[in-house]
Image (cartoon, rainbow, N blue to C red; front, side):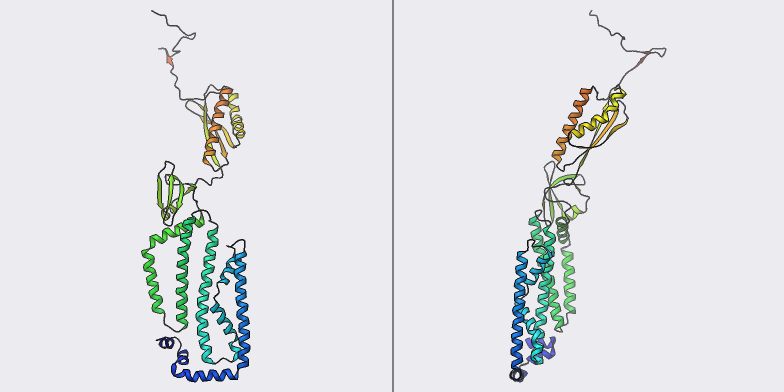
Length: 389
């Protein structure tokens, strides 16, 4: 069966390995060895030197990769990739480089070429796998500390997928170089891949959404985010879903795909939080005192370490003269902002009381008119007393 496979792959190689021809070929090899033993010896020495040099370079590459401070840097990735070079590939490279110097018979040359092709394709797949995984881990190293369990599971799955894909391609390349018709195989793999992709569409969609969250980092574990009408803290980023803890204590579970389809607000990454107070004073406030209100508000805000933005008169209300103040608090911690806003609000109340500024509240005044239309006060100007009966 082995000879039939080689016949389909390379008729010349099959003839060279046919049992009927082996005896004659062995005689030719003996003749070649006795005629070119000096060249063979030199080629063997040169090939051995090349092999040892390549092994030395492989060891140096491994040492270089292991001693790098940043194990995810490009030089470290290249070093790890070269350290994965197989001894069989190094041996065939050495033999391939010196066969021309020893006048190697054509049959042996074809066998060496056959083995070298297989080793080169497999070694290329190994190199590509190491480079792809190295670049992926380099990108993932920026996300260290957030979703580490999810990231580890995702990377393990991706490594398997990359390995299967690359070695499947390598197997097809080997078969194609051996002359095997792989058209049907490629078509079958394509149809099978489409079927698997359609069957696992939802799973892969959530998986890639999880990788997008981990790599793109729209939010991290422990941050507060908001979407739709939900504000919650991120507790865990899984392969399929993200678990949140709402402000009222409920656990919210949403699939990664659905979450990324929404407009997300990350409250933790606010560089500043703007606060606005609306302040209304009574209409009896003297204009000179009203003019001092914006400056007074500015001093209060700056005394508490916040950044004053603007303050001023905004309108005449139904029962108040309306002012407004805006200020920024440069801190992402909501508790800090809440307490700072609390302190500023109470300080405004205290300063206004000290200055005699009265806050307005909804009031109504009733005026009474006499039959002739003259306004009549509802009580005597000098006041009145109720006489006991």
